[in-house]
Amino acid sequence: MSRSSRAPRAASLAFAVLAAASGLLAAPAPVQADATPALAPLAGFAGHWRCAGRFANGKPITSRETFGIELGGQWLHMRHVDGAPNRYLADAWWGYDKAARRFTATVFDNFGGERRYTSSGWVGDTLTLENVATSGYLDRFVFQRHGDDAYRVTYTYRNRSGAWQLGDEQSCTRDAQAPRA
Figure 1 (tube, rainbow, N blue to C red):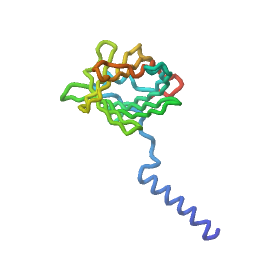
Figure 2 (figure 1 turned 90 degrees about the vertical axis):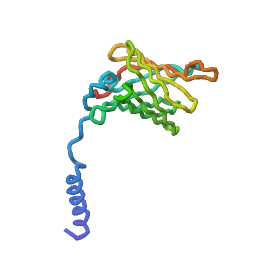
Figure 3 (figure 1 turned 180 degrees about the horizontal axis):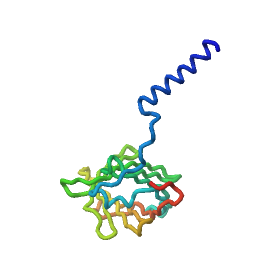
Figure 4 (figure 1 turned 135 degrees about the horizontal axis):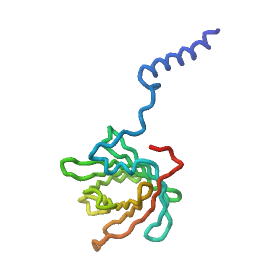
């Protein structure tokens, strides 16, 4: 074996040893933890969802939403991806503020937006996350449960007159084709 053919093999072996030592080749972590008791009321969202609906102007919208319970069961991580031709993407972290006794959500989007919401929790089958911004732009998401495998989400914002105006509405169903979270 020539010297030049041994060098790549030695480098590969060295990488494998370093990777194993650093945990890169360790068994994957569980996909999801159990929700803490405080977060448990939101645990039904965990999984993959397909959504379809309409904007206020009547144009159609589709999206996929994925929720996972993360960070020791303390947070519900949501990933929202609009279907083409729309291009909105968002990551949100939902949690529970024990001191304020309210659910919280912080949304980060592909337009550089960051918004914060709070909710007192479920009222019957409805959960409302309302923006707590002091910048003047107020919006909210209203989720209505329809059993374990469906919900409707309505996005509204305050217009100049102070009335809630529809942005869009979507009905979401659990994606039976996606792996269970």
